[in-house]
Amino acid sequence: MKITRINTYTLFSAMATTLVLAVVTPKEDLRKAGKARILKCHVQGEDSPEAALRQVDPHALKTMYCSTGCDYAVNHAIPHGYATYVDKLCDVTKEEHDIEYKKYTSKDDKNDRKRSSHASIKRRDIDAYTVGSATFTFTCSDHQGVDYTQIAANRIGLDLSICNLH
Image (tube, rainbow, N blue to C red; front, side, top):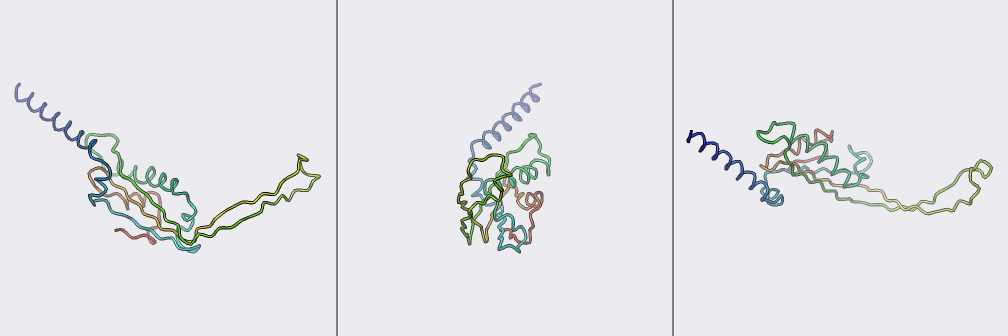
């Protein structure tokens, strides 16, 4: 009986120590450990693959990559021993280059007779900008430093011909 109790206590203390270390270790220290790789992608102009990414909001891009790609890669690709959900370390950055600002004037093409409201329509200026090229960086790993960057990129369907893994 004593051997069983000692083994159980030893097992629980080892699990508690692992849990405390995982909670206490900041994410920045794990990222600086250098185990996670960086996927750097360059989108240049209208003819480039993934040209539509130039206009995507950085927050929306991070949400798409981290929630859809990285979360799946970390939690579903490889079964984990104790947890049903493993927290991920995910980061996406976007640098915009060759930005062109344009000013548009809104137009109302409706005829006065066909208008449902006879209130006068004021003209307004619309500011817009177009991004000529952009550079994206993607990183995905778990707390042990296992790299899932490329698996997550494949999960969201990113064209890897414009990307380099560093």
